[in-house]
Image (cartoon, rainbow, N blue to C red; front, side):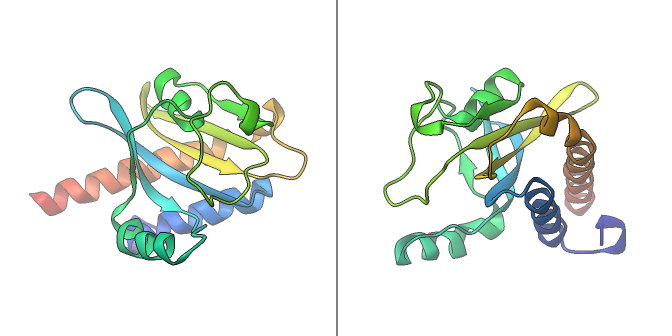
Length: 167
């Protein structure tokens, strides 16, 4: 599937998120676009694993995930990716000084990998994945580069489709 075949953007991003999780043997994750609100960059998800843990979070996910969740607090592990444009490997996230905390009841996070992706030298998005058996490392980051390129192309294609619709 793909944008050229008129697939829904959400389906394409969900498939890519599933592929990232399968390839890395991770439990959950997201693909997000980096946007700017005039004062700072923030993350808007295009695909995110449903890890809702109670009725309130299930309802929130159902109501908001299809349009994309927005995360503006950069004092987090994924916020560090956005702020620096560099990967974040945290195999002990509860003890990592870059952590921002998790909402009460959030599923356990044993390890985290945040990877930025760029297009023409501009940071346009990132992926975040969690809970790979054995943790994350630099070798995996290198192996993921082709998938990150594909994510960058998906974001760019999505933006072009949206611009065309607006015209």
